Image (cartoon, rainbow, N blue to C red; front, side, top):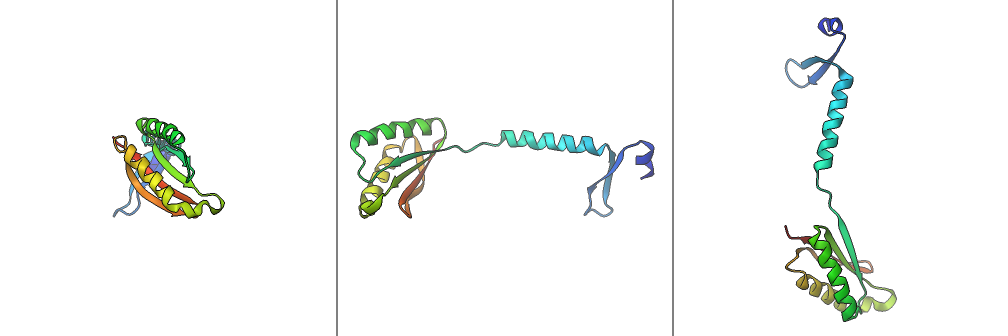
Length: 135
């Protein structure tokens, strides 16, 4: 404490669990600033996962399917994850098999661009499937 007061700096406890506790004489505000800077740098280097969504109906036509499939290919080439889902409105929930067949067909068509992360699963009125891009 005396040395820290003489140098007009702070005494910072680095490792409180050590025996004896480890302390360091430094400018505490500068230490906090450096630590914040390090955390920010690490955060910016972390990969951000982008999820793009594509929505189908259970009775989606071939042309619409092909159009949306092209968009899905583009998303996967850009490195984004793809969330494809079939939305069932009203009584169209009776076409669950059609929705599942549609999503499995999409997975098969996009096999060279990405791999299925989660198989089609019904959640309420949506049947969802995730596809991750291939590295």
